[in-house]
Amino acid sequence: MSERYQGFILIFLSALFYSTLGIFGKYIYTTGIEMSLVIVLRFFATVILVGAFLLITRKEPFLTFSRSVLFQGIFFVATAILYFMAVKYLSAGLATVILFAHPALVAALAVIFYREKINAMQICGLVLALLGLFFISGLGMDNTVVLSPLGLVLAILSAVVYAFYVLLGQKSVKTDGVWTITFTVALMGLVILAIVFPKDIPALFTITPYQLLLGLAMAFFGTLLPVVLLLKGVQKVGASIGSLISIIEVPIALFLAYLILGEILTVWQVIGTVLILLSTITAIGIKK
Image (cartoon, rainbow, N blue to C red; front, side):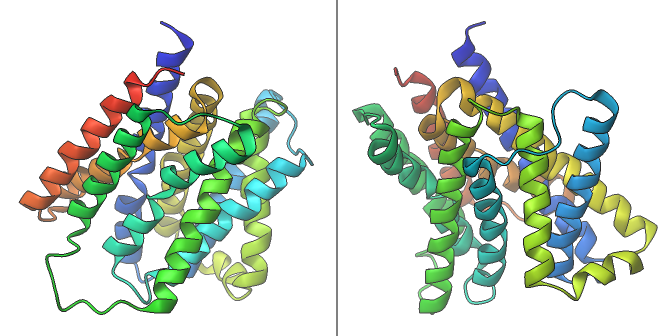
């Protein structure tokens, strides 16, 4: 199998695992835990899991002080915080659509910083993906929705900083190992969260064993595996195509919620899913 198709598979698996984040989030919220503490627990558990892996295997160094990786850590946690703030003012559907519009930003930034070229198929894939996200979100189906300017700004910022995170991944994997990058990003995120949500650090020691177990599962399936697999995939196919393929996470998350949580799946969401699948097929066919 060619490196290119290995990259596609790695990014698809990253999206598959990342789509479980909402499932674990739903279960952990039912225990009465606050959303900010969930974010802190996610990063704390990721640091423990990746740290334990590196300690046992001695596969790679724990930390890197590469500037691109340090900025990745800032951008990764900033995405989580900004999205968390955006959903206070916007529907989760709209905030998600704006966040997952980041492949268009990644493509534009890749042209500016990496001098990459955008072809017609890539533009077609981006359009299909954005249309799919629009249908999945249900926007335009309810004319009574009032948009918050602050919420829109926060959601757009979350997309912008995540685009920079993905773009920097293409650079950082050339100099550092993916496990070192993941540990550094998670540790930086935890430090920043300790500053932003200082009350939640002591609260970590009051959570129940069940909440800790859910947090570890969320960190392993919803953070560690997706981050490592995405970095390895981007290493093989590049950030712009990789981010376009990763949008398939949204319909996967919908179907998992339908199968596991019993959530309703609308006709519009099915149409959106088909459009995103077409965008994924288009991305696979892009020649670089």
